[in-house]
Amino acid sequence: MTKEIRLNAFAMNCVAHQSPGLWTHPRDRTAEYNRLPYWLDLAKALERGRFDGLFLADVLKEQVLLSLPMKVICQSDCRGLCPTCGANLNHEECRCETHTTDPRLAPLARLKQDWLKKQ
Image (cartoon, rainbow, N blue to C red):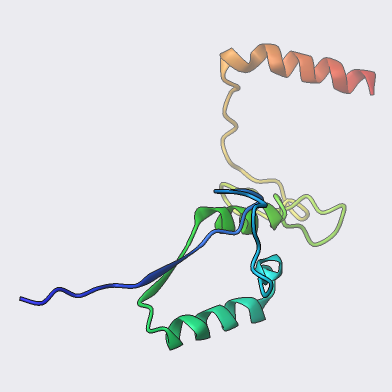
């Protein structure tokens, strides 16, 4: 009975992992991880080496998510869309039920109100 060997590459692009800063290959291009040619060249090299897969560590996903705006808006004065019903708040008020604040957060809500009054 023969066993298959699966070759998988591991790409972890982060500031530090194991043995940070001890040695860098002269042709290292990991600083270009945010450019498409870097990933295309890596994929081609793995194909030439007959690798079966490439594992992208969650650090890469995290960096992509962090680079996205928290709220996508069309203009600086845009009120956006209601996250519940999708109503365009620039043209209409949504008819969603307003939920009461969790009573455990009431002290923080008062603190915020006081702070906004001082502004």
